[in-house]
Amino acid sequence: SELDAHTIGAKLGMAPQLFYADQNQLVLVMEFIEGRPFSRKDLDNPDIIKKVMQTIKKFHNYSSEEELRKQTRAELIKNLYDHSKTKNGVVFPSCFDQLHKQLQADCASLKTKHLPSHGDLNLDNVLIAEDGNVYFIDWAESGIDNPFLDIGWLACCSAANNDQVKNLLQEYLGRSPNASEITETLFYRDVTIFFIAIFWIERQN
Image (cartoon, rainbow, N blue to C red; front, side, top):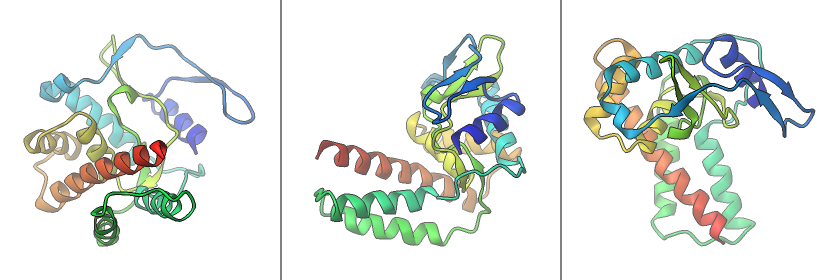
């Protein structure tokens, strides 16, 4: 899934060109691009926000036969949470069971069509090149999922406030977002926090 997604990204001009991948995909050799990672300050730069949002939208809108992972982030969280509790004996805070149940219920109620998604838009994976173009790297978590996952993930990792989230959506949609679109993005911003929390608690045990 990572190799297929990166190949799609390179084809769309939004990922470095891949020159070599070993059989186990442990080694990837790719084009070097001069630039810098996305920063929180970029949230207030409308030109950069527009480029980032329109670039990820190109990937969301891509239709192909490549085998991208079908496991959603909600399914990944469920598997990690259940496995950590039953197999590894990890003890989570008492409120996590209710939060987990609510997350799964809320996710099941969403109606947005699942599309190709990057899955890990943290600041270091969004590259602002010296020529002004935007590239995405580290496609290991890519798959077919809710497109608002990517926007919510970036919003979480950049500590975007609600107004900045609306700006992200405005540039992504090309119009003012409706209440449902805002709600889904904020939901995935919260999902990101929960995912990171259980991931690090699991790693500490």
